[in-house]
Image (tube, rainbow, N blue to C red; front, side):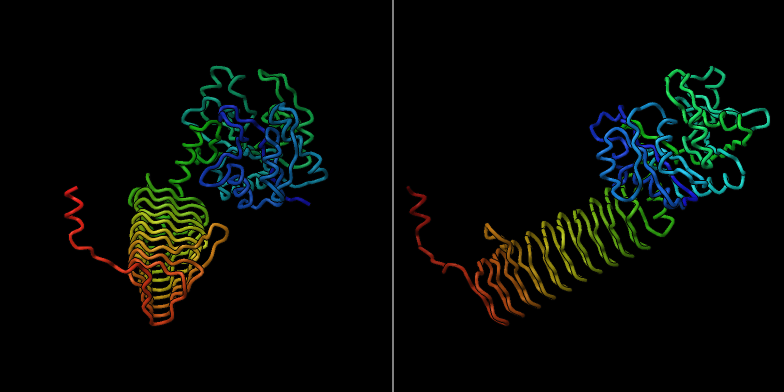
Length: 456
């Protein structure tokens, strides 16, 4: 039995998005709009989720997987008709259905929970969430009688001039008791300017049955912002980012310029960390305390320890320890683990490698498919040659080794503990511990050659 179900409308094409992708799958802060709505419904406490799909139903259904049940609206006959498609899935249920729009990604679960609880306390058959809009153009207007009771909703195209001056608007969010919801929907008419079955008409149908209708106003107009164009998507992104960054600052993070710092919902940042401008923190990134991140850093699914300083870098799907100093112009690729107190200088790329405590990668290096021990010093221009044209091979550099500049370590190869590799060497065989490896041509000086060459 479902005590609290969510019916999410996601069947629209979103013509103004000018896209082949269904509108609700366009991303905001790293997630499709529809996922944000589902997250808010979860936070509100729903125990059943039904998504009404239509345009691009295959893509939307594939995205949903097993997270929600799906009902298909084969014909676009209006919002009332869309909700009616959930009837068979909720047959016999006697709980409450909350109706949401899949293109309202700024919804807050706490506000939806409050709306639901107020609805239950009111005893109303139908409750509508309302808001005061600075510019109500395009929204349905809330109609109230002289004592403030809701009497209905009128759509923009059907409204009189007087009704269009009303600023209280319909957010498109409802709580309706079941099975009353489907009884009301079955009695809707499409006698209106659009020739559609308006969900808004359930209010007047409810009143005809002698049941109360409740209008519950939210103060957060931004929360109910619907997305119909890419301009509106960008505006919603700005609002969401401002909220996330604001919460970080409230929790003790210094953000040098909130307008140029971009943080997704799943990111966590520790106390007393400083974020410099043009920093992007995405996915499930976790930043520790007392770090300095940025400027010009982009992290996706990166875990960073405490007291680490990183600037001008791109990293994804990797881990960085505490006390690390890194940048500028570095790239950490997937499955890389950087240990504590490592120094990574400019123009270094590390991929699928482990780098031990206190190791130095000063500049101009490629470290791929390698296990680098602690206290290692890698000279400028050193690379691990991990690919033979058919397969990748690993390089092992043991603790306290010293690799001279402009060296090539051709995998599979091991550089022993405490050993030295002479500058300019190409190492193809294992180097024993505490040894010196020299692998370069012997220098030959031909005296007078340059003078003769210039005289030609």
